Image (cartoon, rainbow, N blue to C red):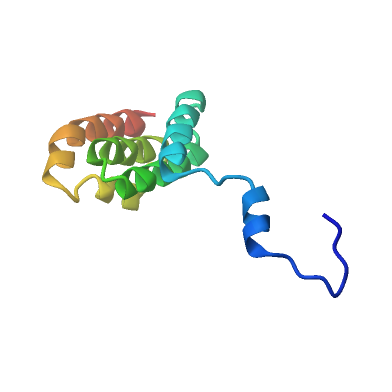
Length: 109
């Protein structure tokens, strides 16, 4: 495409040539694959888990969202990540015991 200072570009032609942006569904898939490959004790893994949970929330997939909230806590045991596990009755039932086990294991180290 030859551009000159006084030339204009038709937006439709530009958009057709632009690369496709990943959808939220792809973000969730990429996030899950990434979490499977990164060591569980790295803080960056917690950040990725939160982003993946957010993508799952946008897709109304509460099961994955809850799982990734727990993964965020497991990798980055902060107070906000811990409290996130108590925002919903289902999350409490599913992940409370796992979180407490991690707390006990961490306290012994």
